[in-house]
Image (cartoon, rainbow, N blue to C red; front, side):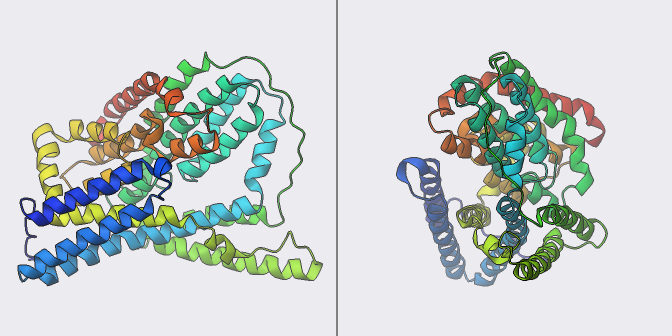
Length: 436
């Protein structure tokens, strides 16, 4: 039986670690103002916290225990890194093959009214984020809204709120839709298909505020946009291989009992072979559009985001080793019970990123039913929609729709988003009560 970890919450090692973590997180929150990329402060924080852990355990004569704890966190991050590396590479390749550009043009040339576009972009954001991540989905749909809504600032502002809510809600019912659902699935807390019972609660989470906000959208038809874009050769093949890669990852978990990341890496092999085939064909036909360099798509991976995940996971994991997550577990789940605790975590995710919150819950590992694990997954996934800064989708849209979609324009509709949040939680508790 493994020795229990030291309780360092009352020592100066613990106090200093908490101070370092909070300072780093403040810098993350004010990333736009300081122009300091979010990965940098959390990398420093993670390194310093683990240095303090190593010092404390060495001083107590238990350095092997600290090493074993670090190895456990490295394993957790390694799985996540490999999975995301492949998923983001596929998304980059789809972008390079102009799949998203064609989608944008197809939507803008249909002659739809602002209100029809409001519902269409929201619906697509909801369903696309179940396969793509919510950030990529928000950027694609945001580009559509900005392209067709240049003459209507009201349409842009309201549609961006809808897209953020839809992208976050759509990611909550799919193991691939959000980093948090991915972490819960890879941890083995829920099976792949269990997540889909959250479909209706997630849909309601978006539909309630969308219905309210739709009355503020103009009924006029935007002026037509003249632009022609064609997908590059091999684009459909990449789409098919992406779907096959997801199926492979699911099969590795469900039928082979192996980590989904291994299936994703096999899927990266599919893409590499397809790129080789396209390169050979492109060189023979002297068609530069056909040539695909898959390694360049790997180079385009957003390393700031992946390193941010590293810093957060190691910093929160370090606080767990110090004993703080045990205290949080006793306070939240011991005193208030899992239902209130999980709903509270969702509300908190509007201010604090949902990734460290869910990783903290997974590290605390409270004894919960599948219904409660689904509840915390749903709450953390959609709770970030309450504020523009509560999710990567909201922050990204504020960046590309600068001055048109702002913190305050989102805050104007927070009450409607909150109604959707409450409705989705209530529907899950009623609809899936057999799982509790």
